[in-house]
Amino acid sequence: MRKLFAFLLACLLAAAPCFAGICEESSARDALIDGYIEKGRELFEKANGKLQRAHYAGDIYVCKNFTVYVFMESSAPFRMAEYPDAALVVPDNLPAKKCKPYSYGYCWEDVGPEKGNAFYIAAQFLYDTKLSKKENMEKALEFMRQVKRGDYFQMSAKYYYGTGAHSAVMIADYDPETNTVHWMDSNMAGEKRGGIRYGKVQFDAKKDISWWAEAFCQKGRGATIYRLREDIVRAGEE
Image: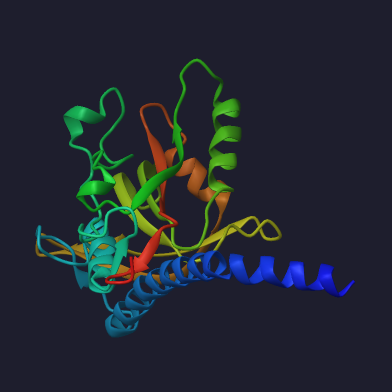
């Protein structure tokens, strides 16, 4: 019995560095996600319910700019273990002419991880004209059930707030008990003042997944869930 115990203990000690490495990577990834979600909360609190300018290319409250800003403000201390020399980035949206036959906004440019893209496509929905509206909706709902905390969400939509591209960050896993997702974003809702667009900053917004699905489950439209890679580490600890 003593020999068996000693053998098992030796095996555990030998494996400990691997376990430690896994925990280190997981901890760094969680820290990065916590960082950009916290940055979104800070911008939400700073806005204090007031609409923020979201009109010009450099305005951080434009929807895509908001999601890029919170990431870039948080990502400098992190790298991908596989590509330690590449600073992390969020790719631009795919240009409209390359989105055809779908409308602009359903996905990003295809940037490789070696160039700093720390995200991969976890799920994607594109309206299939060969299927019925009901069948497409079933696929859209299943797509939304795959949402995880920290996911970046990109869609081409036509819904209550308008028509076009929208970007958001999911701040919690899909909740099957309430059938909802929670997110943060900017400029989903807003208004024009003197010809200038101002957008609302949201944090911990919550909607039933059918609300989201109906927004992009339309001919020529779609959506993509981008997920942070698992091999996120702190810079210098690759």
